[in-house]
Image (cartoon, rainbow over all chains, first blue to last red; front, side, top):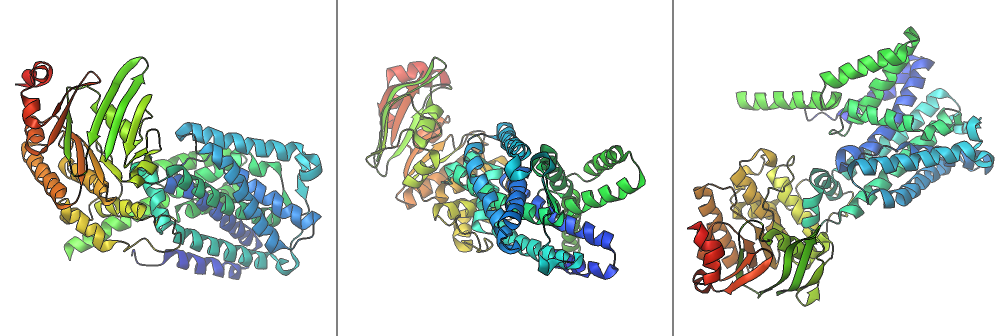
Length: 311
Length: 245
């Protein structure tokens, strides 16, 4: 069971989604793919390094504005704009992260939140650049992606590549250093690990991929708004991550799928959807300690051990 | 190799370490003893970069390292174990020691090579050395206390230190575990060109392996010298050994 390449299977299944021929599902699928990347990038900090970033939306928003502005104001093509969005997300993460990693735990979380609110406030007030409250509307769909199916496949490819890269990263010696920092930063220091430098590196990498996710989301959404950096966005991606399982690589992606699907489902049935959604989330968090995927993995592992013992 | 001169550390007006001098030569096995609260751990923390001393200097291989960050001091060749268990609890025993090796060899900056299988042999050899070869795949947080203490030692040894500081390596151990650990420490010290500075409560342990002993009391050094010298020192007998016997 453990040996199956779940990520690849999920990608193949996702690749078949357009065959269902529903625009609704295509829209949902694109949304999930982009948010999955956002959540997994956050989890590099949360689950792997043990840093609770409560302001990851800052880099999502910066990526979105950068990509959209380059396309709209400078007529830069989509792909380089998207890359620039990621790079600016990383640059902002380097700047903010430099200060954040000097604090620990709840103080770290509060400072990440504070920086995100600054980004939000700038987006809200800087009318000439960001369009202020009304945001940037009419972000053009790039010509080569001018159909929902094409954009969906494009998102799948970008997200797939990004996840493959991140997966490789967490399985590297660098990734192992992050994990020991999560487990015991003090001890890591005493075996010669420059903890702050590694934390900052993780912060910058997470900022890059959050920026990529934001850049794609802005185009997908045909518009970029200050809300992209608002604290509720940071909370949303945090919930996805915890819901899916922060100690598994794909957990946050699963969490993104569950939260967005539930959101879509519940809003179509009742106007009291925040209440219903809240109850469902509370139930899920109780039923699946360690997140949905974390729970499933633990189950599989237990069965695996059982079989090994029986054999 | 290590020269501590006039180290002073004050916590909120309480003088924990008050002008302490300690010299450790290459190959020495030195012990620091003293009652609880004598300042032994604080002194260790000042040497290893955990605390910034309020005065004095710590010279290691000729360089003043007082106040340098812990990871830098570790890179200079000082490793330590902790009195209280300080490991990476959710990783396996193997992964704990492997991580220390990766850090020591400066491979942590490699982002795209798989970590699995890295330093397989070296890690297993180290685990064998500290008596944990059979526990490699166990989650370290679930090990018995004695094994966790041995892992502490393994983590410290992985960085191939020139100077090893052990803070109460047998604290909380059963008599049997204590004996095993002492045998282990003696063997390691004799094998490698390792210089050892340790604190310990168990006087049998101290007098059996230390070549030089420093006695601390209320933040100051009250005696220093060979085990025989210290054993017969009147002041030491009064404040410490006398009470224990």
